[in-house]
Image 1 (cartoon, rainbow over the protein chains, first blue to last red):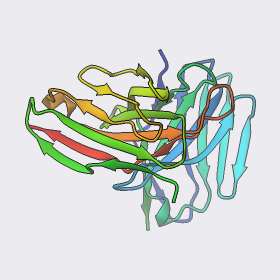
Image 2: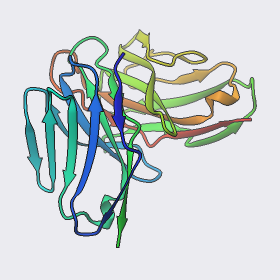
Image 3: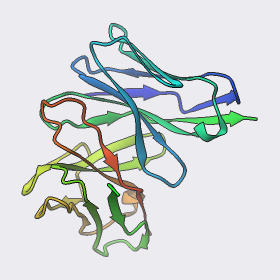
Image 4: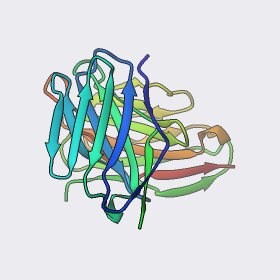
Length: 112
Length: 116
């Protein structure tokens, strides 16, 4: 079945760039997503990328996709304290259940 | 405000006492889904519904039931809860992802359930 893996923790100094990595196994994935979960809240969509794209940029966020290696990354430029959260990578296909398979989540901690 | 509302947000119960977690969305979304979140395991899908009266099992359906009698509501039922169902539960909805593009889920705030 599908599997999505992420590191559990990442610490970054305020103002530096954060890079959160994710690997997935399902080669039929159509879309790959990044969700953010702040304490006590549900997940909110940050961005997503179509599988035939290599990169997507949205303000401070840059998503890179290496489809050959099934590797996805999220770069947050100029990391701020408000970026502290758990970040989930997810993959999904465009047919059937449309289920999203989520990774374990990466807890991003900002060091002042 | 467009949202997914879950109740209760917190619940402590005992083994075997039936409970229902309600989920309601006001966005006229066709697709709804329940996930559970456990440490180190991420989110796992329990059940989903493509539309009214259409439900199906996700990855971890054992011990759960759902119903979809109306478009806006998708309750999660635990007929006889057990301690291994202690978890954080999320309801989510989306417009109609089938073949139409990205499946952008809107999540509720979560329901933390403890079964003693």
